[in-house]
Image 1: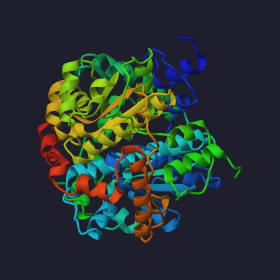
Image 2: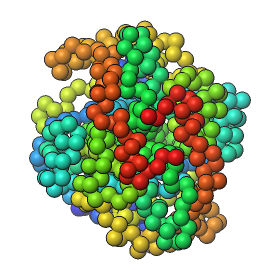
Image 3: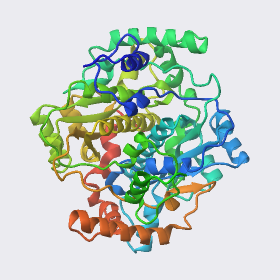
Image 4: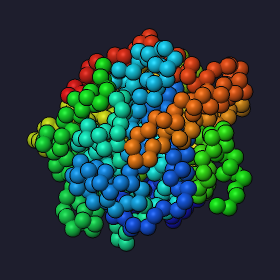
Length: 274
Length: 274
């Protein structure tokens, strides 16, 4: 491999000391490696056509059997944004960003198709069909994120909409068989809001060859805890390890902030999850 | 907007007659729009470092609260590939492609962390935690796909591994709390295997503004059925509409090919889905 300083810097930012072997490199890969979630936005509107370009990118992602069981809603109304920000635990960037999208698992379109053709779809009420819809929404959304970042825009996913999917459905007028899976802020990062690339676990822990093997895990976690402590000191004036963050986030049912009731909420929205 | 023939051609390939307003354009966006799933591979191995680059791209995707509850396994052993191809309904490209990945929803790593710290994680047994893992696996995989395609490689997702997640777990030696969400073939497309870009539903059906609105749907579906009929005539010597394909794929429980039992299979693999 030809030494490439930009590639080495990108890998070091993502992995700290645990840099994986260098591979091929181009501007698209550089953009992917440079991702960071941004939680502060300038009010500047997006250029004309950006929304349609992001949706075209999203729709270009693979979709299981071409079922296309996802949709997306833009939210402009400040009152609606305020409700969604509240559902998400008062995340102010939901109010700030010029474009706020909610990605939807949507089996209602295919349900309407079946009803119109006199062929009700027996496969709809299953967990599998909801999961396909959620995964396809995620593949689509990630393409939108990659497209947005390639244009110099910033993004952050808002999984906390799942704190209260029923309220999200009310605000967006969703019919049965449609549920918000997550939100996405898109816009121009405020000065200083972009932050550093966040380190991830070493590849030795995430990538398994042939069979699952957790053998390298304990040592890798200690090293990653040290990386994340240094990251949190530099960026958040905190002194936190990954281990502590994981325990804080899913150690207790209370920390799920209502998402322990997700199954019941989805059932109320027309996903029996059989 | 400056007229851009490449952009117009890409949008026309993706949308047929229902071309959305043109927006900004660059090589990354061009790559996203040009995606197609490829089901025929040459045996040529991938260049050195490609796997690590795809994993670095995947790990650079957002992950909910940085929990990183996904992993990925490469499958090289021909006997293991044969089992996975059989689970997936004899998809021969699983045997052909030089790199076959299985993306995993993996809460076991965080479970081990909690146990090692004497803090069992109460949030693990919930549907929400499985869903986060599946969504994060999807975001990661899509980054890997974008990276692969930017290198001129072809890909196809294999959702049909969910026909039998328990058998997949046996082949890959997965511990409790880990399940294969989908597979991914990566490699060089065989001559003629790349095919045309597949048209998608018009944006008017998928993109909603402010509130969900299915008003444009019936007319858009008729137009899309005509696009898909022409596509299937050109590419598959078939005469199929989208409407007929959707009904064939999820019209009956039998068409789910075992995935109607997904909830039970996940529960057997250590995901209570509370």
